[in-house]
View 1 (spheres, helix red, strand yellow):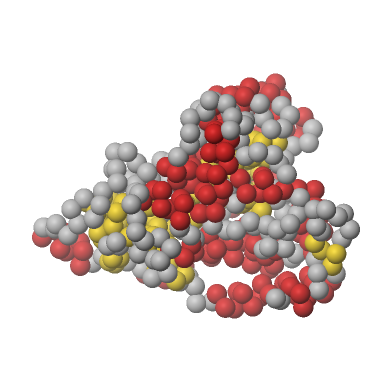
View 2 (cartoon, rainbow, N blue to C red):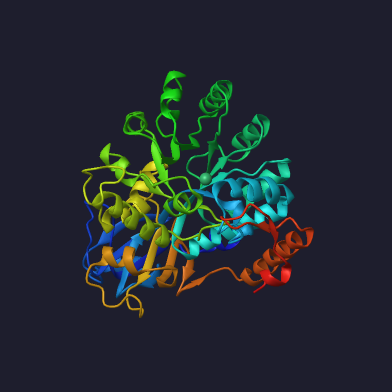
Length: 457
Ligand SMILES: [Zn+2]
């Protein structure tokens, strides 16, 4: 794949689409061309096809993508996902949070070797790209038993050609430094690094935060209930750019500390409601002026696209606003708010809004072309409303990451997909044979072993 990337065209023109730029200065021009050069957006030209001599030469050397009748958006940004869990897709769909800890993290996770984990990360990345998610923060919460485990996870992100933040977790300081010093020291690369800290005691906090400062890495951590922000403030470690995941059950005071400290909030509405974290805090966040990003979170239980997360976010945020739950008096959220959560706000949460999150000249060309003529979508009256209320991955026609086309004409450009699927099924069958692939229903604590035969249906 790397060789293809280097010899691919350096110019791309996406022609004649309805551009939903997510940048007020660019607006939402109809019938516009998006010009891309060397991985960056160089111009959004409102009058498609109006070209002089210089343009004729430019276009002749460019890869042309016909986007007439399509919507052109910045790639979606997933601010928190445990990518390795794609190898366990759907196995935990009925789990509560406790069951997820027990089964996915403590039972199945340790049975996966480097190859399995790499395959999980690769499938997660490809599933994301297929759905127009061009950036993912990989909260890598699998125990890094050996360097080989870590390397397999990182290599898969490189292989996929996705923009990713590898948030290193569950390893040791030496391995963290090895990855940072060895190959992830640049913030301009497609795959960059952060630190996933899940501190237990105050000493852990001080150690993890000192390491993050030392390595100049941003931090990401899960927070649910209690007064985690007050505690970090007391310890004197609050720092801008920290990504706080979930934020369920935090009162307004805690959310205000989060906002005032320059932190970002990553909400995973689907998982938070199905696993029991609590009400996704959209209204509570809005009440203190926080714009969250969205996340798929547990891929063992949630889909790898953000269309579903946007719809869930919209539904729960509206419910909370309309029924005075968790944020009385908050303004009524709109589909535009939610589309911003999934794009520019997500980029801001990750501290990457200078590079991605909108179709803005100078930014990286992470771009999604959505077909507006498919039977579940046509006719389009309100483009933003249609994307959030009616679209899904089937409507994703073309995807670019840093100007490189990774999906075209509705097909992911990965000829090895069948081989990857076969390998994934082998991992599933192996886990089933060991008898450790268990599922539990929420109403029962008794474990039930899923047989291989029932899995393959
Ligand atoms: Zn998580």
